[in-house]
Length: 481
Ligand SMILES: Cc1ncc(COP(=O)(O)O)c(C=O)c1O
Image (cartoon, rainbow, N blue to C red; front, side):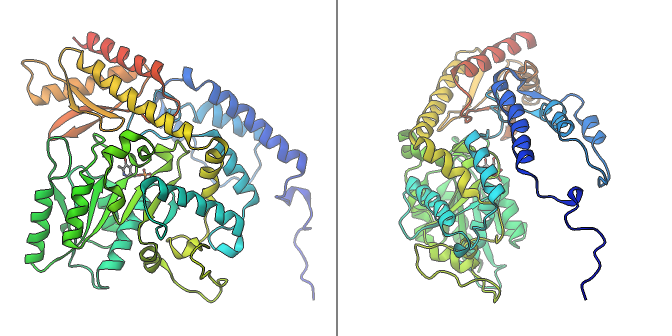
């Protein structure tokens, strides 16, 4: 007997499938706002945080039972919510590690979300899975990894670092892994420490290795620490090196790290979330010599390839090691591919169902070729070098970390002030610079000293914005004196 339906299945107000005209209208109306927003980015404030807390609290609401008109929702987004906070897509965002926001990728997301094909298993969307496989092959080529390497696209660097750590653990340690120890410099990104914690290692298994005066890992300390742990019956299994730290952009001696890793028979992971795509430039290749000798690398396309947030990647030199760490069978899944050229991503990654991230990388690279990406990265290197020279010419400015890539760290010293007072002066300086709203800078603590960072990475940041940054630093210093 057919059950009696409580509501008629085609009642239009229950139907979530939109008519063709409505689909067009939704996109057209959103596009109008998006284009206005992007066109006005250079004139928008670099940050606007006033009244943010009240705004956030005013938005709390229960599950809506009733519909709201689409234009009102767009108004809420574009007039009230998007303008608040840090303008991370704007040219003045020189804070933390800037992201990107290529419009092509937004279009790619619209396509991939709308067609909603399934790329986690190869047979479900073989052509689309192959586009993503091409993207990751390109990444392997950029870092100099061999054909048997494999890569996955993640949501960001944190998940890539986590996956690398689990992969190393599962390949090198027994199931009872708590004697395993891992090593990273005191400059490593906190996502590595978090990854260790999530992967089941207590904090005491994570060794923090000192850095030299350029904030690069001390190889002698690293080796001593590994050897001392071995003498104590522990199992050193992983060293994490940096190719562009968040604090100062420091790149460790990657060849030196690879030598240690080879001698000590440990996995070498390089966190190149920020620095990695500078391998497209001659300067980057020089600074990151030896990166191809690592076992795995984190690269963040949402940093150095200018993509929107939500795109990281992990490359593993021995693709089978990545597969060994992740492959699990299930009777309800379709048969997996045996041909090494045809990749079932779910065998290499913690994820099964996920968005089709490959398209957001593939579309802009295919539309332009890689050259504009390379030129943009070269420009960022030049801008950081230029800013460094300008900073040096300001009396009292100490360049604390020369840019190895596109990040310079500096502080202002004042005769007669102790370190704490100088820290306070530099904190106030950042606030004063940011108050001008043309650029947004952040600081960090380095060995007890507060330093200011300028990180140039957005494809929207060009020379005019760097000039503005320097003008605002000089003006803020005048105001503080
Ligand atoms: C060096 C480094 N590693 C890892 C990460 C974490 O990446 P994500 O924020 O994409 O998770 C960052 C973020 O800025 C970073 O700078």
